[in-house]
Length: 277
Length: 277
DNA sequence: GCACGGAAAAAATCAGACAATTGAGCCGCA
DNA sequence: TGCGGCTCAATTGTCTGATTTTTTCCGTGC
Image 1 (spheres, helix red, strand yellow):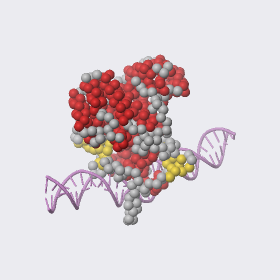
Image 2 (cartoon, rainbow over the protein chains, first blue to last red):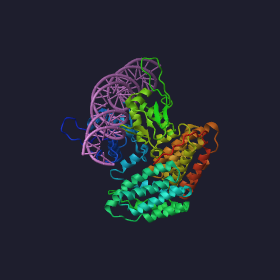
Image 3 (cartoon, rainbow over the protein chains, first blue to last red):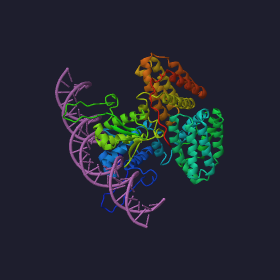
Image 4 (cartoon, rainbow over the protein chains, first blue to last red):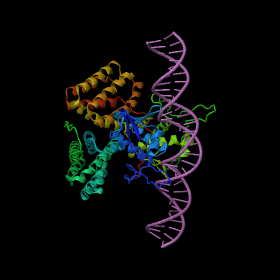
């Protein structure tokens, strides 16, 4: 696949299908097999690969993608499949296509950065330190406010769900999938208690992205810290309907989670920023 | 267009194209002409119409859309165009399609509620009061925190941009397009000063949705309140690098904006059915 | 009961043609 | 010279109809 940059042409070799009848095996460059759980379709895979490439900066904003016919031939897929992939990317604000002009990568401020897929794509390759920092900053803001809201609005059923999640989290550890699921469940229950669908929608996506990044940490160093007490403090505040304390405890929880997330390998500028109160 | 609900069939008459050669004029049911600025393509219009219908509750989560062939015939468009529209909706989490099953509306907690398009679609028909409330709640949380961040990080250039926007807002009023643009610019400048791309991405989308809703208020009652002093107070706090005051002033600003937004007239039955998890 | 395989339905993919949009260049006119 | 309108061509957009895959359902045999 060729893309036209300001400085010339960049190439990118991807083949999704092989001509039939030949003994060639299918080449599956990026995903397709890697994503065992969801079984992406062809257009989904193409969209994902392109999305990862774009968010990784491989294609710069303003760059013009090769025409549909050429791209589809290069990828060995039909024009239909390629077009549907582009539609997906356009729906997420990553590209924009017009007749006679072509499909070009839009400027980053028009990307739907909080779209779950875009978030996942952006943190697929190697997460930019600054971006990760910004994400935790947002999470701190929203989720601690959510804890405050939950403290005033939670029902007993939601409280039970939170308690149950913590117990499961204590039983299995975060090293197991069940434990991580329990962690997710706790946050989901707390968010649901806010009664605000937008907060739920926002934070679930963000947390999912953060958690996939966090998987690395379990690989490198063993359990840096027991997360249960921190969660328990948040839970207790919500149970007591103490909004202020709930907010504070959640904020420290997020900060601790940030500290337990390893810094991505290559991080050029590491200037420290002042955090919100 | 027919959709299959739990209780039978619902119909929906849309025709996008007329057979050529006949004297029939093109019927343009929802948009296409209404959207003068952006000139949506066919697939974009279909996606928009379906998106509005889904967010309006016309199709309930779990409902199964008619098959591609039938739908495209009903709408008098090609299968390609219809499929691309569905891809767009799927990219925003509104529907999900599998072979042998069909395309079904997903449960609301999987919708990308903060996607700019979804937001616009949801507030297109008549905004649900509860949803509007939730949106302002989120806006209050995020934008006041953003003001605090901006107070500590802003550069003088960004400060100049904010001042300039306020001056323009004072000159033209909010009754004019230029004045509203200046309002947008002020908030954009403030958000940019946070240096957090996620906060920018989130809030610009939310504010756009809120502002389109707010357009109504200028029609019904004349200028309920001069917004300039409120904005000036936020500006002054940011200029003084006073994070706490900036946060407070922005919070009051959002609350005032909420009060100036009229309550939507009818909140018919767009209630979401409770579905098993 | 359960593993296995066949059938059918719907989306998914393919192929190739034709239409619509739009930017660029050209031309003529004041 | 400058500007308005015209034509042209490149690229996406749309259409049609066939073929392939995926997935559910259902039977069949163990």
